[in-house]
Image (cartoon, rainbow, N blue to C red; front, side, top):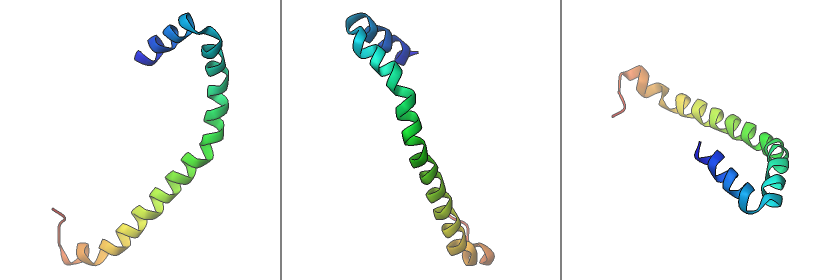
Length: 65
């Protein structure tokens, strides 16, 4: 809701910039989408590596604090 109110204020005070932001937002979102997917994949790999490293401790019954 706050974002919408800020956008409306921008529209009132500087409407060309607000319209430019409205048009460019989907384009920027599409350009950043591969980086989000890459981040998700890297996070998954790190979670997998953590699971592999912690497996012996979990088998021995050690619980993380």
